[in-house]
Length: 428
Image 1 (cartoon, rainbow, N blue to C red):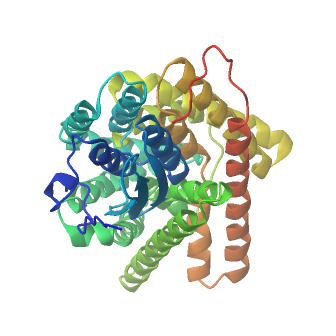
Image 2 (image 1 turned 180 degrees about the vertical axis):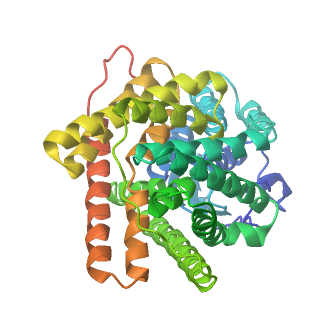
């Protein structure tokens, strides 16, 4: 048994730099690089393993693959040699829809024998070294716009939206800076939560903005809330990827705890300096403005997920479908079944779009689930526990679990819907 280990937890390091790594032009080398690329660009464990099984089978290899948030283990059985086991150490990658789309296209072309392994490996290298779809200032601005829109979705006032925009701008700048400083990356949730909470209390006190503190803080931190990771973790557990799901769930809880610690520290420091929170009640806002906020937020998610500008329509379709379904379903069925119905709608759109238009399902699932996921509810739960409001914290945590399970159930149910035989493609 041989072992290959990429010991640096950076997505930039290529397997070409690892001593004695299999040649990228050979089928074995291509399989390893494909797995690493798919993981880096944010493909969940159950989809990655399915893809690798299909690709290896097309190349005449047997494979046993296990994907974890920080590693990929693969035992590869060559047609004329001894089995080999490889361990690839990887960092949990951010979702990059465009690179994921190109990578899945390469995998499909290799499976269909349209290109050979050497060409496939070269394409993967070109994808990895390609320029970002959007510049840093666009991404920072997207942070701010999404935060302002989420504040409106939470029925925030214009003051809430303005301060959320400012907080989102700061969070975006810190997030961009964290990519260059490792210590910032590890403490990013705590640092941003402290800055957001402290800034809200100070600005609210100095300028008497009369903002709803909880709405502004959650809106400013919305991109960092790991609701999507929580849903993926539950989906991995539901699909019997127990190790990956458990590890991802633990990582999600760590982020929640960091956010809660940062906010608690921000409140304590602000209170010591005389800046105390003022309790303001959320007032109803026009429904049309909320729908408009959902649409604008969907467009702002395009650079955050590194998608192409021409894919903005898919983001808009996904987000509006998710919100509309949840809005009306919740009125008749309640919050949990409303999330269940929303997940079914998004899952069906993703499934049919990927087969009819050959786009990654993630392009539909990710923006749709940003609207659906219980990240904000989970954050409220942790804050309540930190403030020793045990009953409220546990009650809210239970709601998070129920909504998360409803999302996963809806997603799994939508995956069972059969596709027309003349347009369906073999899963890979």
